[in-house]
Image (cartoon, rainbow, N blue to C red; front, top):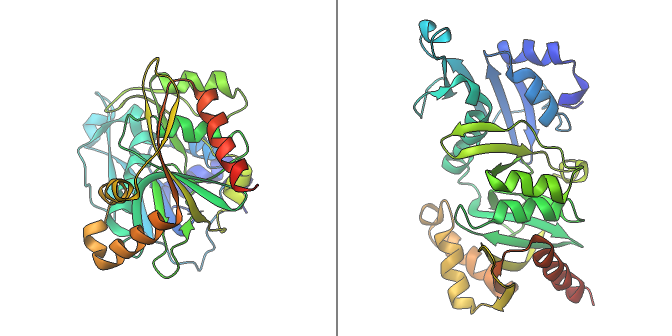
Length: 305
């Protein structure tokens, strides 16, 4: 059963009661939300995700709740709660859905230390994974969203989850948040992409969320092994460049883009070293999305002979 298999009123009832329990990759997430307007958005964007089974362990308990009752009528605000406690300041009520998405990512980043967590988008094709470790603003989300609507499978836009026992990357195909101009870029590039409403004036500007294609969600149990490390940087008007990167430099860049490198210590060092050793490493500078995708597709074709 998927979220989309439930009527919207049932989703609203679960959100206001015991919670909507959704499985996304290796995590079961139970969501409660008092503002009922979230039900339709969740039903639309989470529709393809499977419901967790009643006897499954819940990894993350989150909630969107109203602040003081009077604020429900005068400039209403909501709080993101995890295990009943608010880790952040309130958000305007109209930003409840972005607050939920950011909060879930925060929960993963601060709790899932049984994995090495790289700050990286990850896509897969032909059994090989391509990672895009990058800081915010470097164009990884736009590039990732374009690739997964052009024959690549999404593992994650935000987290490269590395399993310590074998170094495999585990999928966590969550919604992809696009910001500002990137929203219109993807709408033009792939009109068939499922993109949620635009939320204006958030702490990160205008934000809209892209639902991964059905194949990426359906194959969320299939891990992949890293084959390429590509460090992207979008620059207006730049000529496309895909330059080989020394592995020593790639190691430092991957390690500094990890959420919990220091927590895992020697295990993290080993996993990053093994990944860099197994990957071809590149620095990508691009301005034209089609050119960048064609060059990355060529890398994949070359790997398959």
